Length: 225
Image (cartoon, rainbow, N blue to C red; front, side, top):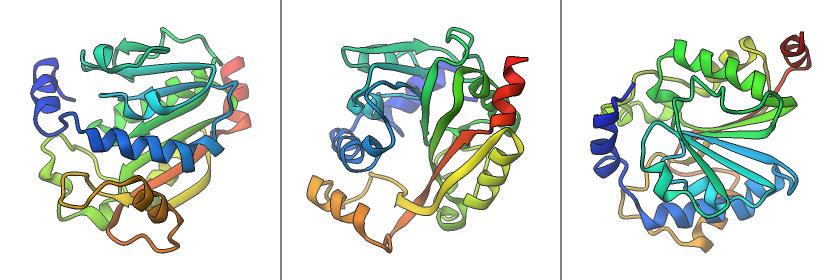
């Protein structure tokens, strides 16, 4: 995983703040995630970084977690930021989270750390709680996947779905192509174009996947024993 020093360098270069990223997540919230998240939910974002997703969410309680200290300054009013590792969610009460979300996170973790994180989430999510993931799909992004020097693990939609199923989650939605690989391009990021892109049955240039899963009832029950 990225050291604390390297994280500062990483977020200043490879993952620097982009206004158009904020625009993207505001539109994604309005036209995609708002149908999945109820106003009464407690939403947790893992690897929140600049908090573009969690800041856009509208719900009862919002929590952001990232190892990078910058999460503290980027969290909006009403978002509770934690500078913590996603493999240790002990600061959260068990069965207190309705919806957990991670974007472009798990490719930065070893598979062992990912599995540890999933175990933490099974304990913190409510029974049948939701985990949503936006993730580079190696099947389509293999050429540029390791342009990011912090990527350590590769996943396709099939591999990631199987890993979730093997670790107490039931996959309910899996899209192999959901979003383009990166915003670092000449393509304009306009709300109207993003909205149109979400509605297209075929997603040109899409190299990121979207997976939505729920804690299996058997796994949720096991956490209570």
